[in-house]
Image 1 (cartoon, rainbow, N blue to C red):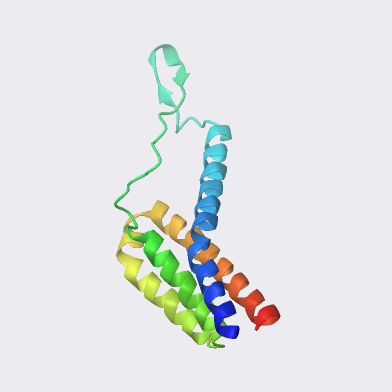
Image 2: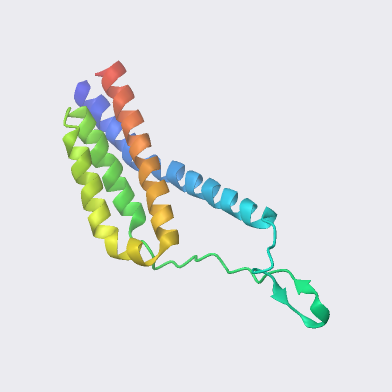
Amino acid sequence: MEILWGSLALLVAGALGSPITLAVLRLARAVDDQKTLHAPISDAEAVPVADGEQEAPIEEAAPDTPGVLRGGLVIGILERTSVALAILLNEPVAIAYVVAIKGLGRYAELKETPAAAERFIIGTLTSLLWACAVAGLTAAYLL
């Protein structure tokens, strides 16, 4: 019976974490967009036009480049499954390996793109918290 509960916990941690992570990323994006809309316009940000008036600043489009952080869905599923498995097997040190491998693998992309680095941190923390919660509750109450 423990194998069944453990397998179910791995499935829930790995597969159901994706919609939660995407929801948190959307929420973070909405908060950033809201701050951008309500931010005061300074003289340095405004674009001068004729007759000394100032026009609203030209907003930079948020980088929605699909090539950045490719494979995130598969990596996220593997990450959450690995973290949950580490908790269920009582090997918390393995979580550090998962995070280190993920960070080193993404280092070049994260170094070049600050927006990608922010999404990486939010997504990783959400994934880790979800996997830890599922595996921790499973270990505490069902195993």
